[in-house]
Image (cartoon, rainbow, N blue to C red):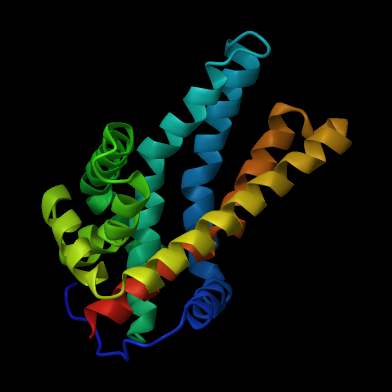
Length: 232
């Protein structure tokens, strides 16, 4: 899917975020099942290892969850990106088709996300190019992979090209997304501190899934931003 509609370049950060939340609510019948299909087993596996396999307070549990998410989430990300792009074009999008598209693109998306993460960390550690700058330049790599069929290298190049003349706006969206996600993750820690029922494997699974559902708009906003910039 490479055709994108022409859009004005001046859509502001607030409008982009509002559009992302509106799209997430409007398309919940497709987006929620996508998230549940991927995140529920991922969270069950991570928490089963943390609570049933590893000793209590084992720091390895802090690594297991992110790796499971890194491997499985690209399936959901691809499905969400496809769904948002289809609905943005007023084309139909259903759960089964979205999941097929997500599975088809999951491998390339995982490779791209892994390479981007490693390069950002290397850039940050080497102090050659701040990791935050690379993160902004490559922030549209995921939609490029899914909607243009690009590999990791072309996705980075294409994303940087799209972002070049809109760096400040993209950086503002990325900053808002990080802040919102951090807020959601922080709030998700509160129930387990107040209610013992949430400080269990089942409770953590529920909190994990709810947190991911709450942050779906932050995946959606970058698809809308990609469509906006690619349509210039």
